[in-house]
Amino acid sequence: MTHIVKALPFYFVVALSGTAQAEEARGVYSAATLTPETALVAAQAALKHCRNAGWQVTVAVVDRSSMPLVVLRDRYAGFHTLDAGIGKARTAVSFRTPTAQLAERTQAGRPESGIRGLPGVVMVGGGLPVEAGGSLIGGIGVSGAPGGENDVSCAEAGIKAIEDQLF
Image (cartoon, rainbow, N blue to C red; front, top):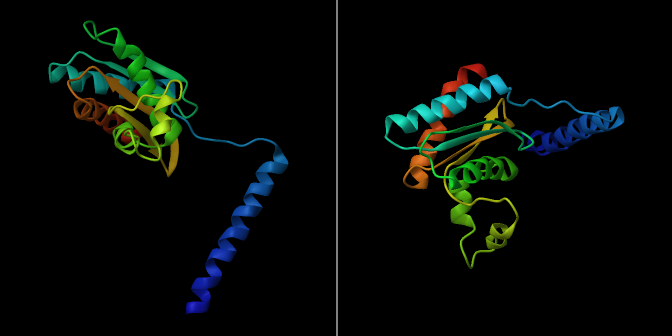
């Protein structure tokens, strides 16, 4: 039994390398991403969740390439929430990690602290990657609620609203 277990990673690597070679030979690859329609549903649900809590926010949903699909700014959300919401969504996609986790990991004095200086990176809670079928398909960022944990709760409501539309 031990020999079979040791052999499995080798076969797995061979299978993956064959797939990679096939995609490389074609010169293109296919990847799933959020549609604008699905992104709108997520953004509206996140905005509604925040409004119900009394928070004025901006919600941004980006595709897997970090390009904005939908941005909704509530009427009294601060001007800074626009850039922050888009930045949170893009950061979550780029690092494939919720921005609250990145904020913790990139504190001053930590090995990853230099990431904070990259252009467009927003290390504040409220950005979440959106995944389906084990693949990254986009991201959602919320800005304007009091505290990153509240931004996160709104972003989670947006993702929950589209779960049944994802494969």
